[in-house]
Length: 350
Image 1: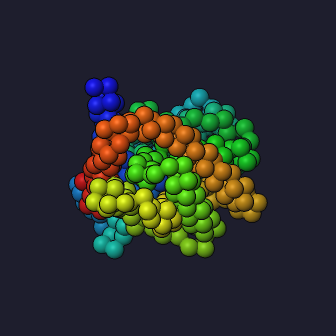
Image 2 (image 1 turned 90 degrees about the vertical axis):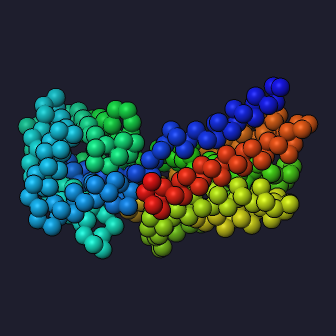
Image 3 (image 1 turned 135 degrees about the horizontal axis):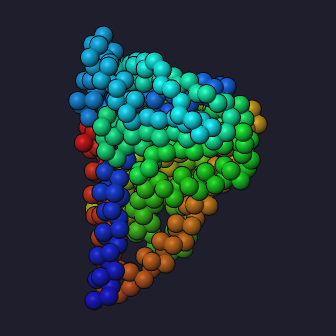
């Protein structure tokens, strides 16, 4: 009875990301530059990820429809606020670009004028009416003291920094970023669940995790060093497809563990390009790239090991007795459902 309850909770836990992050792939990118008392805010939107009505509105604005442009500008004034030195900055011109027939992205650029040039900077936004209820914004904030990675997440969607404080860009900062990225990367974690659900013994786990680590380290380096980059609109559906593939293999193949390390390596190459997006927006140069690449990769591995260390004992408890075959199947079905939902969302924008 206890084992049945635990297996039910496992399935619900694996299904939760599909509902908690229903539109987690609606991710806008932002570039914020503060120069003296002038702030430039540039939002980049992936059009296939947002509601069709928003795509049509942006396209109309770009094509000279003045009411559409004014509607977006008014919405920007209501949804975006900037304060510097405890005084609210004044919003200036709103420019809208992209959104043409052959464009995959649209941009909204806004200028702000502030009375101060130092002190505490607070930026709050809420583009949910335009981008969808559960969107998030990731990007960079550049000041005279360096660049910071910022994120506007539910429920507050606010960023606050001291512009006079130097930016931390040491090894530990990138290690921390890597840990945070993997622990909050639900698609990568569910992929690991699918990979390990049918693992047979310690050395099987070692082979799978090692293959995945080596593969994503290679493509993370390649993408970060700008040797080869692949657009998110291709990588994100492939990551979802890799989750579905491995989960279905668990359900349909007699001995999925036999060559699991091979798929772990192949799909690890894809996931590495996904990891690289966290560093790609930082605009690092010179020695900072090396620190970022090594530190971030170490952080990802630490976060991955933490997850494996927590997941495997739980799996071992649930696979005792009759759960030996039932638990991996329940886990694989749940992962396949979530992965299929993400795949459809990332391709069709559900």
